[in-house]
Each structure stands twice: as C-alpha cells, then as structure tokens.
Image (cartoon, rainbow, N blue to C red; front, side):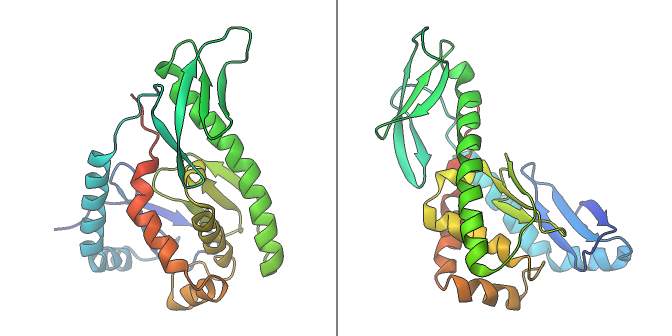
Length: 231
C-alpha cells in the first residue's frame, strides 16, 4: 500500500532525499528539485516500516500527553527540572509569567485562559537568550560559522539547519536538561559539515560529544512531556 506524502522540492544545494513526520502525522518528503518521482517513491517504500512505527509512536505519545490546566500546583519543566506554578492576580503588577526561587508565578486575571500564551512568551524569550549565548560559545570552540538563529514553536523537530546554515530551535528545548540542549546544538552545528544523517555525520557528532546517544535517547523517551498543550 502506497504511503501518502507531502513533497517539497528544493532548487538549492540539497543533494539527498529526507523525510519527517509532522505533528499531524503527515509524511513530509524533501528532495532535490530534479529528483525523479520513481526515485522518491522507492525511497518512501524503503522507509515504510519506519514511517508506520513513527506515526504509531507519535499517536501513542499524543494520547499520553496530559493537557495543561495552568492552575496553582501544576508543574512545568525548565532546564530539565519540574517546578510548581502559583497563580495570583495583582492589578498593580504587570500581567505575565516570572520564574523566581524555583517556582513559576503567573499574574493573570483570566487564569488558565491566558496561561498558555504567557508560558509560550516566557519560554521563547528564555530560548532566544539561552540559545544565542550557547550557540556562540559552541560554534566558536568548534570553529564552525552558523548563519541566523531562529526560535520556533515546533512540536516534532528539536532543531534544524538549512542549506544556508541558518539554525532553528524549538523553544520547547528549554524544558530539557542543559546537556541535552548542548547535544541538539552540536547536532545542528555538525550539519554545517554534513547535511544528511550518514554514518560519517554521526562520527562527527561523536568526536565532539562521545555520550550523544544517551542524550538522543533521553529526547526520544521524554520529548512527549514538553507539549504545553491547551486546556
């Protein structure tokens, strides 16, 4: 049975075919512009078992996600640790979220109706600051020159590196431990040297971070916790 997919062709320097599963369980294939359809279909057929397993795993993880209620006592992750939330309303203070003394404080009259908005805003601001500093530090020591950095709200991709070496990270990574964040940054920096996930690519990652498999496994086992779902 043929696997339906969304095809994205690139006129730029892409040399290989790749695929990913979107957060809607859609198969998205990226390929060089002039790649024959028969070659793309053959690639999909070869990956069919992996595609089916990945979609099923994604659906199972989505069922396991507990919807956030944004109420006092609920815990949210920051740099790998869970911290409790306390909601209050004080009109003379700015509305929004702050993190202080190992606790989240949400000043919000509407409570959970605005909770997701303020958490997204806070995580994105923290991610922009954290990733900019850490990317600069690691790229300097690895002697690699990335392009622009962008923070996204992606739910399935922790990071990406474009053909122009522009690097993106999802703000959800701010919920992971610092060593895991470093793994993702190093992973994307290594894509400056190699755009695919060949054996040689993983050797490049391993030279810089010998324990990378541990962090990669952590993301696979724990990534579903970081959905920040709506009520």
